[in-house]
Image (cartoon, rainbow over all chains, first blue to last red; front, side, top):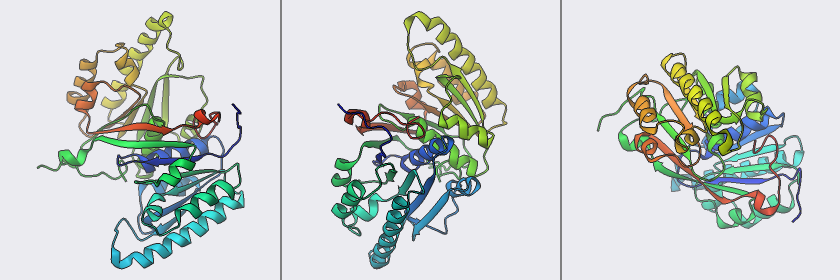
Amino acid sequence: MTTRVGQGLLIVYTGNGKGKTTAALGLLWRALGAGLRVCVIQFVKSERGRWGETLLAERLGVEWHAMGRGFVCDPAHQAEDAGLAREGWALAREKISSRDYDVVLLDEFTYPLAFGWLDREQVVGWLMTERPRSVHVVITGRSAPAELIAAADLVTEMVAIKHPYDAGIRAQAGIEF
Amino acid sequence: MTTRVGQGLLIVYTGNGKGKTTAALGLLWRALGAGLRVCVIQFVKSERGRWGETLLAERLGVEWHAMGRGFVCDPAHQAEDAGLAREGWALAREKISSRDYDVVLLDEFTYPLAFGWLDREQVVGWLMTERPRSVHVVITGRSAPAELIAAADLVTEMVAIKHPYDAGIRAQAGIEF
């Protein structure tokens, strides 16, 4: 067994439970604490959203790009969504290749892959063969495609056991978004 | 169905997968971004550990108490571990009751419950009936007891699908601890 040290990991947080983006933010927390350089590219989520997550990122000086239109999945806007996803992926490759970052988070990146807006094999192939070996890439979102799971070093599935919406409690700022 | 707004949630991240403490840190990230006041009490983990997580917490001025001896579970030290857990739980009640915090994280708190160092029914009973209604409490750790899961508003189980240790990659500072 060979031990690879300083190898950038491909990390995937997937599943239907809460906590995928949250876990990725926690990973950024640790990475920043350890002095690593991080960059976030959010797919699907809109720039207009002023979430707790972006507010602390600003305070910490974390580079953060929101490339989506929002959570809506509307067939009428599919061409636009696909275009934004391609733009986001081009930006992701640029940031990963730049060697300016130790950790690059591609938040909600499974959706463009699952919806077929990006070619899965090309994306996974690039991540495995073209990205600098030392760069950690973290990908979140439901329905991570099999190609991505096969390629990833660390995959955690979040399973919802209980959710407060069930009990009639509304999502709360600072806690769930 | 009644909608309870401003209700503090009891949130549990459990399971054998990576990402429980990580998700809790991400929740703190959001909470801090939204201007909420947070406090962390770490059970089991030792004060001597200088993890990436505590370094950013210091930088952010987050109150952080480490109450354990480390990860080791040694029968010879059970009395000491149990004592530290009781001390930690007393501190937790004090912080939660103080109303000085909107979110209190009890990291690795399932272990003292699972090992029987604390009385589960008393602990869960206190969280449900004695804690100020507005305070969010977040609990992490493997083997969350059934009483806790029954009482919680939000429970997410982290399931390990793939782990880099399997491939001979060592845990890396800033990423996994």
